[in-house]
Length: 261
Ligand SMILES: Cc1cc2nc3c(=O)[nH]c(=O)nc-3n(C[C@H](O)[C@H](O)[C@H](O)COP(=O)(O)OP(=O)(O)OC[C@H]3O[C@@H](n4cnc5c(N)ncnc54)[C@H](O)[C@@H]3O)c2cc1C
Image (cartoon, rainbow, N blue to C red; front, side, top):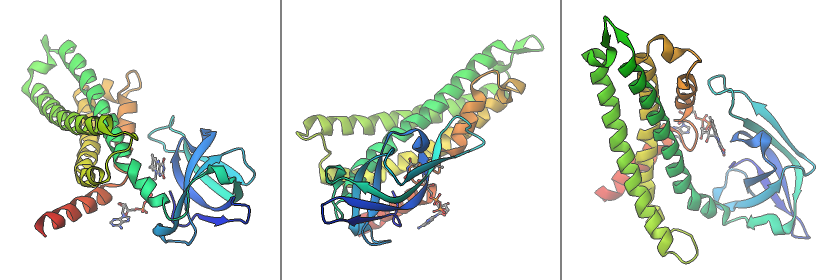
């Protein structure tokens, strides 16, 4: 998605894509991509949606390394006169943004699920460790400095998980009722604020839970002999992808304005 990547329609109905976009999950590995490009730079209402075969001439992808998550393949893609056949222009300039927003809530809900799953992974590790590890012949979970903070992380993770499942169930019901597999526009629009609340809090929570659980595991929490280091690395970057903290806060504050009005 990029407001500076352009699409120019040709006489035969094909499009030429030009531009550069950084930070695409799995970009360097993808055989196919969905690209959103505008016919006028910085004008979102001219956005189109394109299905792109990454073996086409003019397409290059470099890998960007995030030290905390060495196994994630993040890409920087450059498009130089990539010719997209007519049939791969799945959203003409003008409707691309609408198509983008159609899927955004579901993407953020999926991401939130991933975040709480990481928190649960960390909780499971810390629970096993603190129930087995003994100091002064006593399991460390019985020391309140260990057991009580663990319950705090557990309670927060459980409550957010239940909220997330509740919203997901509403979405599932609406999708089941829908004939075309698309969420009704009004529902999707009002869903945005609640999805932002979840994305915002789940991303922050997982970072805290993974770090604190590792902390409760002492040396074992920071070594590479368990999944804790992966969980800590992943949870540190979750506030950025799928819309940063500030973007979620913007959406939420807009929601509060609407309620007030
Ligand atoms: C691991 C990872 C995976 C990603 N995967 C994808 C992907 O698959 N597809 C894709 O399209 N993108 C992807 N991204 C890109 C991601 O969506 C952007 O990095 C993110 O939206 C922030 O944009 P930026 O990096 O340009 O930061 P900037 O826009 O430079 O933001 C810098 C800071 O300013 C704040 N800020 C920016 N604009 C505003 C504003 N208007 N109001 C208030 N605060 C603002 C930001 O919140 C942030 O704190 C990914 C990024 C990461 C890190």
